[in-house]
Image 1 (cartoon, rainbow, N blue to C red):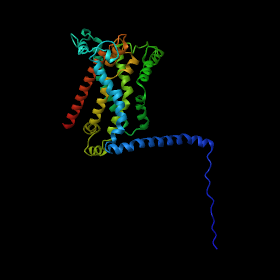
Image 2 (cartoon, rainbow, N blue to C red):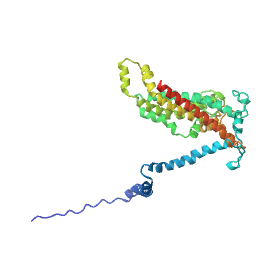
Image 3 (cartoon, rainbow, N blue to C red):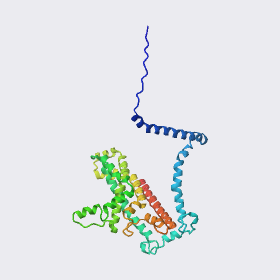
Image 4 (cartoon, rainbow, N blue to C red):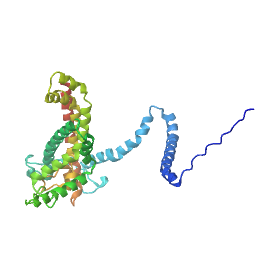
Length: 350
């Protein structure tokens, strides 16, 4: 006679109050996620039957398109409208249409190479300062970022640590960067403290036009180079290592490998870096505004600062003139970008 033994069900271990408290946020997140998915499915399922599967992509990109339209496209169109209006009222319906008057005022110069002969001399000083800033900042940025990427691409001790160190300034706000360097470079700042300790006189880093421009460029490169270094480093790592091995078999040196292998294959990435750096350099404002305020005088006043001060900084808010200056800036930036892209395409097909 066979006996059947029935095993008692295994009891689940009881969770402590602390464990239940720890698991509570996870359970809440999971419940909220399921609720959100149920709501999305309740909306998306009838919509998919109505418009079809192929058109459902528009439903998912619609929120981004709305945000882009409200916060980017609409302000751009409104700014373009303001460029052809006058007065000091902010509301569009209260602003009279003046045609090209704002643009004529900006370009009213006896000698375009001498800002003192222009009706809006600060606009042209800002244009010239922006040109020299872009020339040296973008050139220095690309060169230093390339050198840094080449070094970090080699097998060195602590390579991961140094990659994160160079990228860390990118995470800082431009205002924070400006404040930090202002505390270092001002007359009673950290750098002059070391100078006076060793018996020297305080150096006026930010109170001289040439030195202020130099330090503005240095600070800008320091704050942004990590981003472009990361892009160039990704471009270097995408180059097949077999090409370097084949070059070594043919007896090529390090300089020849860089010139005939690395540089040509890295050119598309270099073009992207140059275009991005150019766009960002032309739009420089907050970091320099905190660091020097555009001074001394107008030595570091750039075009975006002129637009800000014309529209919002003075007692009389000339919104139309500021909008016209921003349109001129946008057109110039578009021309430079298209020219760079065309030169890049020409070099690729050469």
